[in-house]
Image (cartoon, rainbow, N blue to C red; front, top):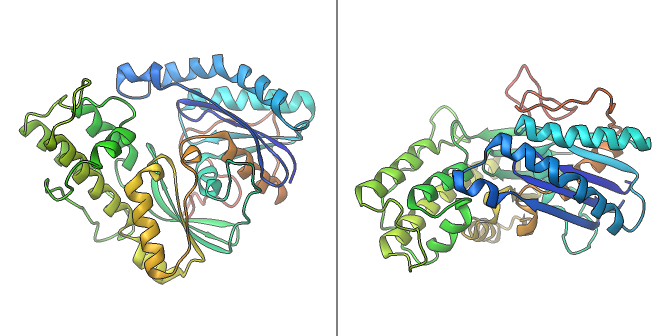
Length: 357
């Protein structure tokens, strides 16, 4: 593998990184847009694109100055994500690679999350990918289980409606906790009783590995309104016990849903490793529950550092390195962005079947 410049602009984080040939992180920079989107309670696509346009050239200049040597390749997120945001990163990366005659690799954002647990933010070399891995990706836009088998990726289950992170954000918004909602609910849940608020755990009979968070989210929002707790978490005062109990109950329901397919998946595929990645993988209950499951069943579990759970360019750079080592390269003059999961880099998806990422 060769020293790689990674660029990530799929949503509301402008991220640039340089990773050396052993997968060591030399530089990792991020420009957060949380303050820009917070007044709207979520990401505004046009605003995100404009913020990327402002931040990306500055971040790349800073990364190149701080890198331990010249970059030899460029990897960029080409989908899925917000189309305007993706186009900023893809066009910049294509021009950068073409102008310097560097190889360019388009990376699937989900592939980046899948390899993120193999990376160390502290300067250590990347871990080699085991032959068979069960991987959960849970974020604001995605909630799925994957099988990583000798370099191939197959999606085993997915959310049928809302993603887990999106549900956290919606419940937090109704409580007046602001955006993003996941960290706020996590903090409140540590002071609440998860048995106080009865919330559903929907299961789909025809798809035991799939999720549905829409009903759970609606039930939590309905309970908040019935109890008169709308915006009860806003302000600087101490949160009340009912708010903390709701946070704990909702968090427990989401985590239970995310991990409910794991026993059957593990029995079926006998993984060498189980991982979780994406923004929701920073949740303290999920991290603890997955680690305890691994200890109980003598299966190794691996969680990325919290700094690598959210959208970042380190994971994109390393995913690009792995793809390039396998022979992948993209033409910068023809590369385009794909907002939805219809984009299919080799080995990632099959359009005519349900398999694939």
